[in-house]
Amino acid sequence: MGISETVLAALEQKGFDTPTPIQALTIPLLLNGDTDLVAQAQTGTGKTAAFGIPVLDRAEERAGFIQAIILTPTRELCMQVASEIDSLKGKKKLSIVTVYGGQSISLQIKQLKKGADIVVGTPGRVIDMLERGVLDLQGVKYVVLDEADEMLNMGFAEDVERILQSVNPARRMLLFSATMPQRILQLAKTYMGNYQSLVAKREDVTTALIDQVYYEVRADQKFNALSRLIDMEESFYGVIFCRTKAETAELAQQLEARGYPSEALHGDVAQAQREKILQKFRDRKTQILVATDVAARGIDVTDLTHVVNYHLPYEAESYVHRIGRTGRAGKQGTAISLVSPSERRLLGNVRHIAKADIRLGKLPTNQEVLQRRLNGLKEQVTEVITKGATKDFQALAAELLSQYSAEEAIAALLKYAAGPDITNMPEIQPMQDRRRDSSERSERSDRRERSEDSSQTRLFVAMGRRDDMSKTDLLNYIQQETGIRPARLGKIEMFDSHAYINLGEAEAEKILQVFTTKYGRQNPLFTAAPKEKRAKSSNSGWGGDRDKKRSKGSKGSKSRSW
Image 1 (tube, rainbow, N blue to C red):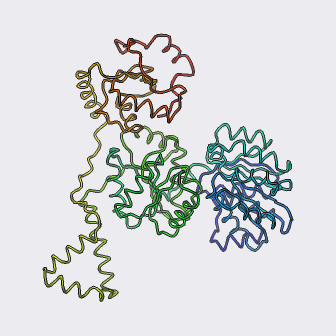
Image 2: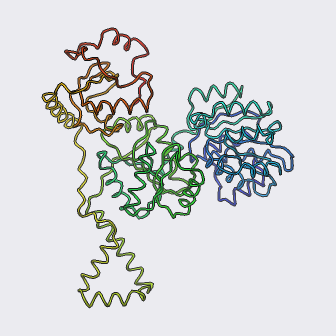
Image 3: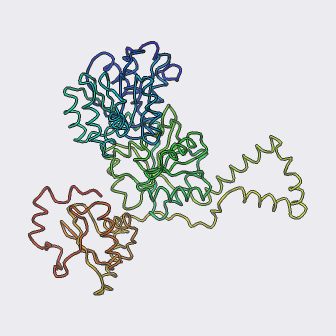
């Protein structure tokens, strides 16, 4: 591949002997030419080494100026990229400096003034250094944008462009991104001119080393199901993904209360605390990390046993990105997805777009979980007896045996050691067949229709049958986004391009507030329906002209995501 002996020695010391697909494509191209590069690669594909090795090989010792700048979206990724590149340089005398927010800027300025060959930084802090005149990028040979899509998602587009305008025009630019939206391609077109494109194929990411399994479970039983799955594993060391900060914090607290050492990682966690949480996780003092997608960017732990989708992501690419964190370094990993009725369509989307082979699993029963715990306790007790580590407890044992039978005393101690009692927990009921569930929902809807009163509010829903939305889908979606149970909602009228729903004033107010806050006021999904515009049949439109406009322009609501 043309890699220097110094870097090869460092790779051998790290135990790397075979390049990953993205490395095999990227490294020879960059070492044997002067092209710019746009590469699509997920987390876990070895992309840091893919751009780091050529940068290190081309860098000169004691050059006296900054030769490469690497931009990352988060502080955590900044530190990890710098650490990885430092480990790859071997005996080559190169100075690698990180600049990111949350750390003393005076310390970083001092390090830059000592001399830096490679700078790894976040856009905001790099801009700060440029404005202070302590960062000179005119000699830069390489500019690397790592996780470029996330940088743009986080609002760094202007900062990135400003940095690119401050760099030596003759530099080479390497852009790595998990996804390739149009704005990434536009950035490449503007600042890269002619460039090569590479893709680490999806099948290279979703490897045979990852056992992908999903469990069908109602939304209100997900925590119970998750607890059982963790209990059944001999070893569980993983990341659990939630959609929101609130869900992340709540789930971590629930897991901690059940005896699983857990921490939450989301956007509100301060940088210093984030670093402590991640260090505890790497040291395995924390068994489980509960995180949002954005907060998990840059987490690079090679020996995770599990990744759990507590909620499926809306984008198939995010699913691939999540599960790519397990099944690394030749080790088997497991990707678990807990799928509620409202997420069935998301599951189909993941299977189709990501070409993911996800099998259906069967949740363990209470008795199976209990038996697994008992077997584990037996092994632990046997190990303690074998080691002879019971001396300090023999007096207590004698006291207990003087008051109770041996069976009673041992059984009580084992029950105490077994953890939370699951014998009284309700069994998780299998989800009903979708057609039966829809039929029963229809019957309940009919009963609600008969019990309507004039105090109810009517909402207009800007989606209908043409959007592949059923009454059941709408009810589940509202519950998922707002927490309002279907039983609290009234009559639903479904049309081709829209729908109506009758409900109480409090429920209507909450729905309007949640969807306006979350999705903005442009083209709202839910709006208050004019009272005089009541449709009489499923073939009639709503307000005539409005419906025509919806069906005429850009295929109406097809662009709305579910």
